[in-house]
Image (cartoon, rainbow, N blue to C red; front, side, top):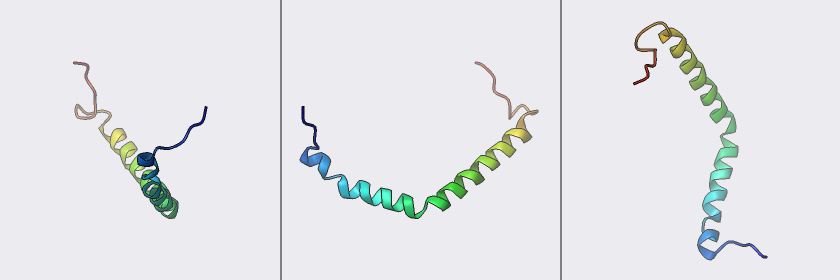
Length: 59
C-alpha cells in the first residue's frame, strides 16, 4: 500500500516548515522561558503549600 499526502495536506508543508524553522531559531529562548516558568511555578507551589489557597480539596 502506498501512502501520501493529499493536495490539501501538502498545502500545509510551507506552514509546518516555517514553524519548524522558527522553533529551531528560538530554541534557546524557548528553553529559558520554560525553565523560568517552571522555577516560578515551583516557588509558588512551595510558598502556597501550607495555605488554604495552595491546597487542593476534593469536591
